[in-house]
Image 1 (cartoon, rainbow, N blue to C red):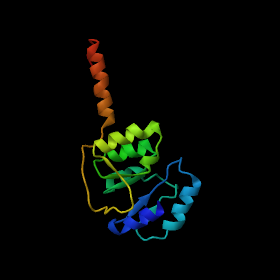
Image 2: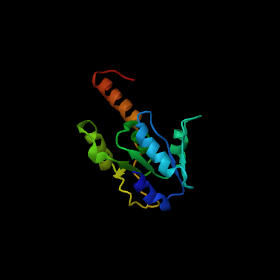
Image 3: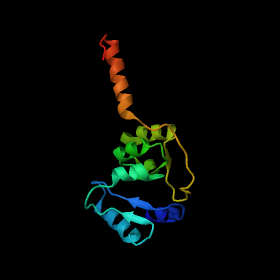
Image 4: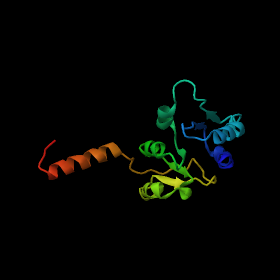
Length: 146
């Protein structure tokens, strides 16, 4: 993954990296060791306020590991390009989720050969609204009005 990130840094203004609570320590150590001195890379150290919401607002594109359904969902709610690392390695539990994101045009695999300046758009995910609509439809079928 470090090599892939290094390969695309030429096409980025900057790269901001934050780890989830589930990121294995050995993975974060390798990424920190190999990328912390790159002038385009900022790695959040876990101290202070989490920059996640700012990253969502200001990023032009995202690279996210396939195991983080919440981070993927949040990134896909922006309508900005989302590259996924490792979706092909997911178990059955996540396979349908990743397939649906690809079919919606929200994600593409991260190969380390991307030009991050090339962009695409899609209708942003809005799962809360979709869930609320389904609840209202189910209630309406039962004669209830919300």
